[in-house]
Length: 397
Image (cartoon, rainbow, N blue to C red; front, side, top):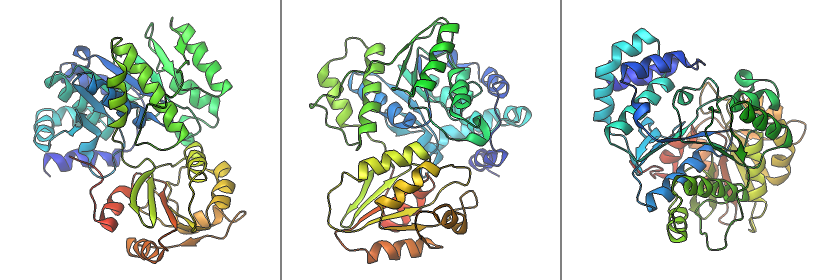
């Protein structure tokens, strides 16, 4: 097994919450996080978008930016970038070669190893700022082993309930416990019950959270579609101004225009209009519905959906059923709902169809009328399938 295969094999360990393994591995790596200035992004939806937006804006201001996000669409290299360039395989190989035994001895997970790799890579390349997306939760996520300059909370809602808790209060508490003593925090406007929890824990940790993001200027031209994305961009602008108070409007405008974040209401082709979105939980799917309902076109709306079997989307079901004329489900892999499970989920609202292969998905797309709208939705796992079907590259390496 080569070093890249070894790294990917760690995914079979799944998720292990706790900071002790990350702390131990970072110690072996000479604690690169201590030499980095970083921004930690915490939340449920919009973390990657906000992180990518901060990266784009600060790059226009002359910063060398390390960006760590998850999950990936096509290749694990996407998770670690410096100024939009993915980490090369040769650096990954050398890192694994150097620390493989430590990773084994430590029982480090894939995500914990990737976090250490990202921090090591950013330190080696002397980035000016590392933007670090929290993976799952907050309190015990490996990114929380760092001591950030700023913490940014995106929208917090129900997701990963089998791990983080059965209600929004439990989920918000887990994420809020990532707050560091005395570190400034800013936040996406939250539901009242979430804000109360965030503010309470912030007060306990001798800091406060700023929710005032201002308004979205008509001068801002963004490739990201949807009102929720405007709020994510406002959050990114706020963070950028805290990091670099002298940033000017021209740099902000150019940074917004140059945001690159595939899989978020991404137009794959124009006729028929085909959109790819990784929305995979209730709030994400409701945001998708809100955005698509404003599209004006003559044809049918067709949803092609594959969804991880741990996801709860009950509140989104009636909206999806009402918005889309046809819903077709498919099971991308063993982690996803089976076709029968998705058919049953929708049974009280709509009769939906199923397909079993990329060839059948491709057939649906090819048979659609040119004035139809097709939304391919539900998971990052669509990335490789979309590249095959449309013969495109979603991510620039």
